[in-house]
Amino acid sequence: MTRFLIDAQLPPALARWLTEQGYPSQHVVDFGGDGTTDDEVWAQALRLGAAIVSKDEDFALRAMRDAGGPPVVWVRVGNTRRAALLTWFAALLPSILTALDRGERIIEIG
Image (cartoon, rainbow, N blue to C red):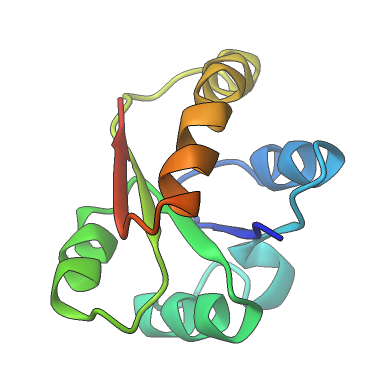
């Protein structure tokens, strides 16, 4: 089952929406709060077997270097309202899932 871990730059509503769609998801505030480090996010994604969804390029770069790490969905869209973000993400979710099923390590969307 595909799981997601949503990083701090994205709203908790994305994690709730993904969970409602049948993809268990967690936002960083659910386990670490605002001060969660990238290392903690990475480790939690590994524990959960989750893909990290982030706007942070650092996760994409780390995924390139660490073949044993979690996959990263790198969100390359500017600031937007939550409703618009969810609509945009909903349209892309099938292609994200397909890429994850193929074993892609970095999925850049934007």
